[in-house]
Amino acid sequence: MNLPDIKLNPDYRVLVTGGAGFIGANLCEALLQNGNQVTCLDNLSTGKEENLNEIRDHRNFTFIQGDIRDLETCRKACRDQDYVLHEAALGSVPRSLNDPITSNEVNVSGFLNMLVAARDAKVKGFVYAASSSTYGDSESLPKVEDIIGKPLSPYAITKYVNELYAEIFHRAYGINTIGLRYFNVFGRKQDPNGAYAAVIPKFVMQLMKHESPVINGDGSFSRDFTYIDNVVEMNLRCIASKNEKAWNQVYNVAYGERTSLNELVVLLKKYLSHFDPDIAGVEIKYGPERKGDVSHSLASIDKAKELMGYHPAFNMEKGLREAVNWYWNNLK
Image (cartoon, rainbow, N blue to C red; front, top):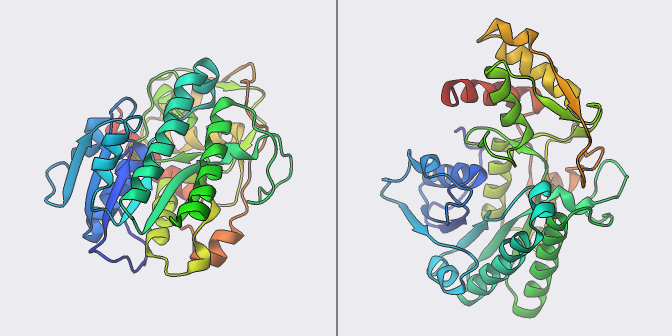
């Protein structure tokens, strides 16, 4: 991992919840590379132990298997920490539609447990994974942080409630927080399996098997696909920030360009064909639109640039090339 030029104090002790997950594991690796003491809290319900294979024996790494729905586990994990990067959550709009109660228990009650534990441990800052789903039915593009619509799924509601709780905890208790609204993150360690797999690794796995990916809708829906290293950069910038005005804010974390699903599949076939020319001929199929999906998503990252110095190094195509290389070498 090539860390951006960020002056992050290596003496900081950082807790990463959901640290065995896709984003969390990449954050753990980056922090260890910087010299930090890192604690990972994960119940391994969606996180994978193999995501920690390269760091499990690192002298600065501690793994706690536990659930954020248990307050005492959260207190134990937060003890003696300087910062919390809260990534633990049940993602996926379809999952939340199928099981809204569990999504709420993890994403709202678990989030509140973590806020309470972080407050009581007097951490310097609490940075949490928010979501672009918070924009809901707002049709304005690009998405600007202070203009949102009505949520379109239980998942979106839970992530918006996180933002409300974070704001109240700052006002009531003085804890410093930052919410990062991720836009369709992809890259190494992202799980291609399961009913709720993200579109890019799922399509990659299918194409590698010469199976036809199924696009929901006509393929015109577009997303601001965001490579994992851009997300890592923003998280590190949050911890490193000395700008008081930059805290207690919500930021879009994206690249600021959108790609349709049809364009995505063309790029995936192009890059995967370098390894297997037959992939170029795999047929693409189309199915019904999914409930709760927004048609288009595009982020304004002006606020993150101005207050955090965020300058993402990976556009969609550069990130996708990196990701495809990793997928090919690790998912076969």
